[in-house]
Length: 129
Image (cartoon, rainbow, N blue to C red; front, top):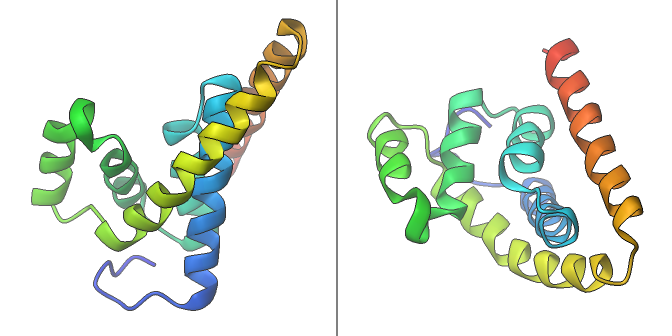
């Protein structure tokens, strides 16, 4: 999905919604989501360039913390606004349910989940494309 002006397919929309839900859930549960989950998912599942994945993910954090970064990526043509909106809608729900679960799990288990996610995603980024 390197051409950010193309029409999204139903499969791509489903992937974007699932990515948003998973990232929101993990954000609520262990405090990760945007850079660790969404960026690699856009790159590996939808074929985004690294720049487009980063710019699109930053849109999720637009208000108030990422607005200047998003503007820079947008000016360079690296923000897929449609994809970011789909992810945002489910990120909210996912973060709510992830946080509800996280507060019921002991701290050691949450730390292990967090550490495992970072290691898995780091290995994937280092050894992947």
